Image (cartoon, rainbow, N blue to C red; front, side, top):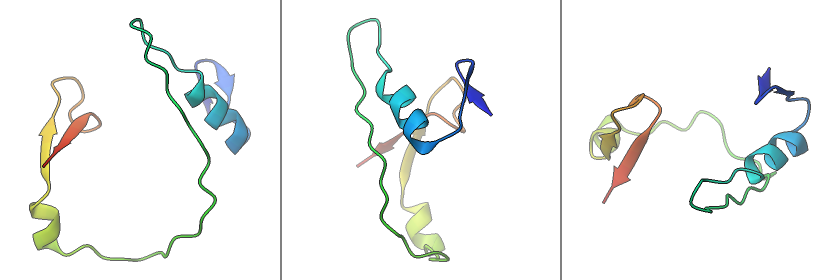
Length: 69
């Protein structure tokens, strides 16, 4: 796997690539690796999932969306 033509061989490399992201208007991205352990297999109830207000974007709405209050 690679990103922007660079191989993804470590977590640090990936975090550095994300952290190097800039927009044309000067927005900078901060990235850090979270090494905490999280429990697996937690089921979110269907009612909770249905209550989440997602606004999908026109371009690849399955990936790009906004969580609304």
